[in-house]
Each structure stands twice: as C-alpha cells, then as structure tokens.
Length: 51
Image (cartoon, rainbow, N blue to C red; front, side):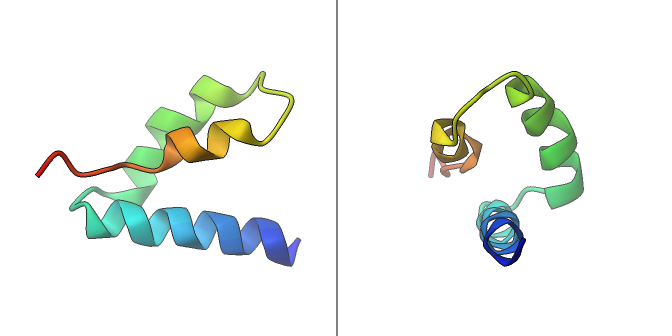
C-alpha cells in the first residue's frame, strides 16, 4: 500500500510541476488504463511538459 501511495503522490507532484490540476488529470487519464494488466502504463501517466 505504501508503494502505491508513493507512486500516486509522485505522479501528482509531476502533474503539478507541469501546471496541470491533479484531480482533473487523474479523472481523465486513469480510466483509460483500467483494463491494463501490468504496471507499464504508469510511464504514460506522467505528463511531460511540451515547453
């Protein structure tokens, strides 16, 4: 549970660093990966700034 919490926290901090709103970001991105069976999708959750 602690590892999962750390992953979500780090994604949230990355989202904030890219000037996005974490709550809205998670609501729009996580549902796209509900059927994924491994953790490889985690790298796609990181919002990289185009700046």
